[in-house]
Image (tube, rainbow, N blue to C red; front, top):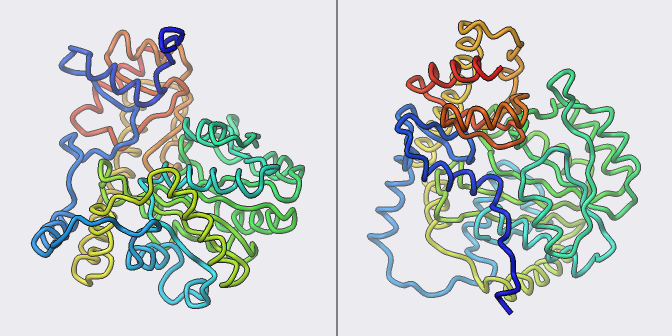
Length: 396
């Protein structure tokens, strides 16, 4: 049976990392995979995370299973981070959350849940979007549609085209929205644009599914949740897939959550019972360690303050690299206007480099960028900026 199989294509992002690792060039640069790097080019363990980990290990007495939906303390901490302290969604019981292995695990649980109970619903995803989105939903049996998002003429949000497409979606379809720091473009709706989208989604009776993987890395922890709160104000139901790989640096701990908002507390509990069935048939119950770290940090005043400072430092470093990148390209004599990269937010930018230029960067300079031209700005440092911009100037 297995001999009949042919080699599957490599993942467009993780496959690029494998190629990078095999490259013998000592000056190689990886701007492909979405991992935060500090000024030394390392992916650090946050100090707040390290302290929480020590406390957990010192007090740990068992390795017993968690519940199917995970830790209740973690669920409350995640919801408070999403909605803010004292939000009515929590106190009313309209919101429930399940612990998941990363944001990808949360998206897959959502996909299984939607396909089982709303088999006619399609998922609308932005064009472009994260390379794994379409695959997650298609393999769960859900039909995927796309809506336009990025305006190549302005290097910004194509709001009118986006709204026109979503206005044609039938009631009951699901629209996947990036909560902040859109991957791969780095372009987010402004607050008034979020309000318009929220009104459209409510009017069309669409179900919002918010992929929230970068909270705190755009404008700030609360500011990055403004779009989500706009949706909460108009939509009686929604789903949120959270990832804490980036803002806690817990990449290999696979810490995420799926939050479900229902019109009433009873409906939320009923939906939760079905989410638990999806989980039981998938990974049975979630990993504990990463979620325990997040809970410890968010529940401790001192650790929370330190963590918020570390998230702010990451956000500021990314913004500095955006400005330095634009300025260095200008110094290298590049005539193309890259100033839009300073206006984008989060770890990624849609650079405008085409496939031929991306391939030339890889072959001639050992610079690894995703084929569509997405650049991980967080992979830039002051040490590699000169070489990076010189190479881009040459291929342009």
